[in-house]
Length: 125
Image (cartoon, rainbow, N blue to C red; front, side, top):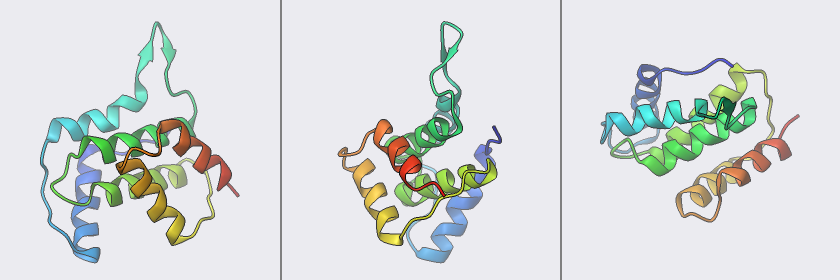
């Protein structure tokens, strides 16, 4: 799987804030690193997130819930997920409202990691 670096996510955060508004800055660099590395976790030699979709969903979930940035965590989480899916040849079709609802649902706790995987699979083309 093609991954994204911490430095790339930070650049995306600044570009997104420039384009859509909001404050910039990292609240906790370690939480950002954790959000990106958690998708590669294993237990007893078994990958906890074996598919591209599961890894991307986990990164999205962790970026949103870890709150590594001062502002824009939902936007960055969703954007990084979409970029990683695209990098890894997973094509999606969705509306802007569906993306907004996904981000808000993750942030308010009504959507869990499994729900993000389901959302990805339902929107594959």
